[in-house]
Image (cartoon, rainbow, N blue to C red):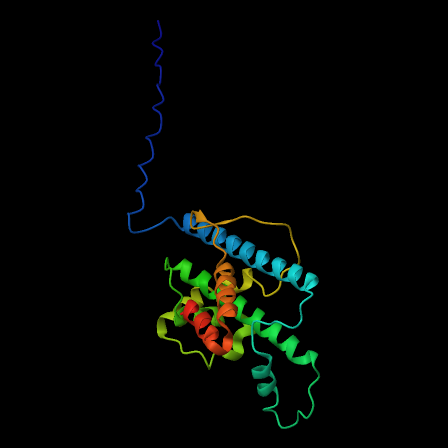
Amino acid sequence: MENHHHHHHQPPPPPPPQQPYPPSQTSPTTTSSSFHHLLQQQHQQLQMFWNYQRQEIETVSDFKNHQLPLARIKKIMKADEDVRMISAEAPILFAKACELFILELTIRSWLHAEENKRRTLQKNDIAAAITRTDIFDFLVDIVPRDDNVKEEAVVGAAAAAGVPYYYPPMGAAAGVMMGQPAMQPWQTMWQAEERAAAVGYDDGGMSLVIHELL
């Protein structure tokens, strides 16, 4: 009688357990996902800002009161020797352009401060916002920077590509920043400007706005 040998196939050994990332390190996938989520939040905040500004400009009816003194703007315009006459509406347009410039640069600087988990806007945040944004490159040689800002600017180069300058109108968009309720830094600016208007720019109101920023 023939002996039948039954060959039992052993299952392959289980793979070695994967080593978890040390507490001080983060999975590259997680880091990339968090950064992408952060860019989306920044994109939403800037969209909300420009959407609000567009609506405000379309509905404005008061052209006599301005956040910035028209006389000061007109004086700066006349600093160019080639400028002889200035129409009444030109300083008004410059005033609004300067206001939007200050507000957007403040928002981009504040986003950089939040990336670094700070609640105080610093010169380095402004320098980083300028370095990241192509349209602000004319300020690179004016705003002082340190080595850390230059390194952060390289890391944040993707942010410049992901957060362009201008956004078309959109509906209200809610977002969160690092797990916290959405911050709208321009609201602080509006509050500061309202208080400055109450004080009067010639009576220290402009200093109040600058103090709010610094």
